[in-house]
Length: 325
Image (cartoon, rainbow, N blue to C red; front, side, top):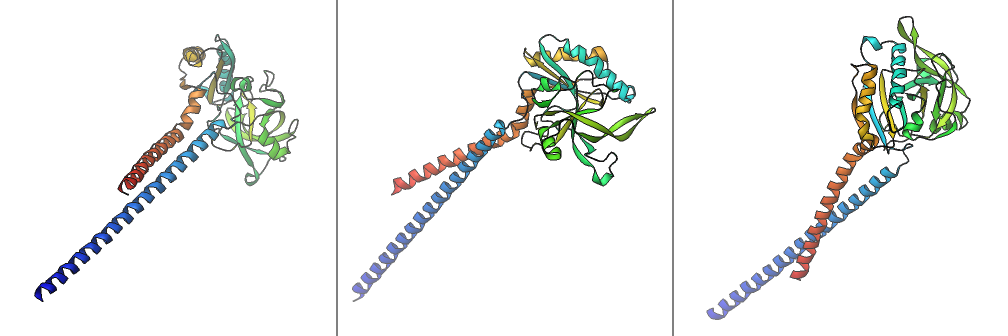
């Protein structure tokens, strides 16, 4: 009897051990399968995110920016110091600089402006129908002072009217060019020949004052994304640089040659007008566009790399489970 009892005990222990092994094996398989499902899910999520980022990046590059970035060199100069405090001094600097820029060999067009495409521009107050609007009722839109060849230099088409000319001077009637968004928003698309009032700095004795000036729309230009390639187009208007001179000027050269090769000639043109005037931020327009999408491109590449790594790990996990089975 003791022998039979011992045998039963051994059988019971063996059965319990077998059950424990089966249970442990089942738990291990469930754990492996759970980890595998998690790996595959994360890989799918990362791959989907990478695909969406790539699609978004391609769409950003395909946006109609409103200008042609090819063959353009840009730079900036600031008219600071006591000698440029007056509007007439700023106007004279621009008038003397433009002919020197146009004399550079190989140019298609040369222009000056207070902002280049894709770089933020300042806004000015205006009113569509009130010559002296109270502060709370004033509208604000991006405004850019430009020289006559600006649109040809940046490759922005003019849909209606005319560009500015050398006849648009400080003593002639005030004129303005609006973009299509401005024309649609404030004049139902029929802006040519209409007038509105723009808040401007005006010379008052030896200082500067502020007032609203009645201005006639002489042209309607294409929409340009001045505030960045990913931002929506906003209402904007352009003013003649001769009428609204500024202390910050962007130089824009469009050339048949490699635009980067014109940097020294651009510097010489500036120093020939004012030897102490600095010139900085010299870049081609294509470099400016590239720098704006660099961060997005880096994020896209990082996500794509992590997604690829996750897909490889998931594939290895699937292969391992199949080998065990």
